[in-house]
Figure 1 (tube, helix red, strand yellow):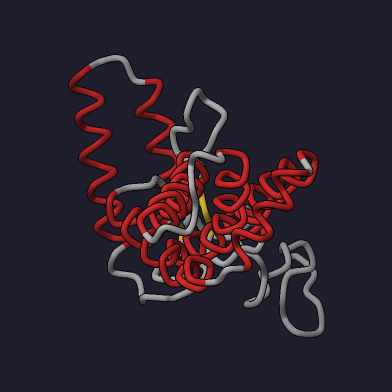
Figure 2 (cartoon, rainbow, N blue to C red; figure 1 turned 180 degrees about the horizontal axis):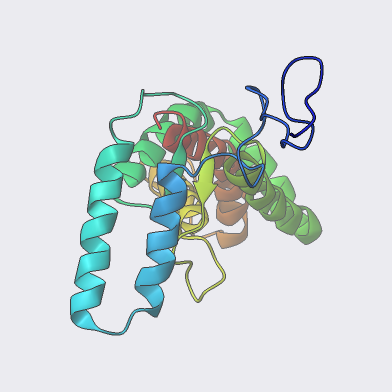
Length: 209
């Protein structure tokens, strides 16, 4: 007869699992977004047309599940850059840029930058770094780089900066704030206006989710 302990259990029985024990693997359960990302990776390596069609159908179904999750302003997964993102970036750019279009200080600073090329380049670099920080570092949203240009440059970064720069050029020119007969001053003024517009474009793109 097998020996039993004081509680009546067999001495050689394995210990019962604790109710609060972690699941096998110790990791968190997979999410819908992780599934979508895996399917996107699979789509890029599948060669057969029929198999690729099935993968895309699975992606559509997974995205349908993702839309049923409770809405949240922050922390949502953002990928790609489409027309709605472009419109949101344009709105944010205009809202942040209107003061720069009416203030005389914009052209004054632009003239200073035109006479100091290192400052001109530095302003452009700071603008790019600020946008990168908002999009990919500040973690307002979980921004994913999807199909970058030339395999390196994120489409969202190019879109946000492009919207801000074009808005600055069009706004300053249309309202007679710059004279392109003096291109250095006009470019300096445009970069000055682009900086806050780029910040507004990045926030406008991300905050609506």
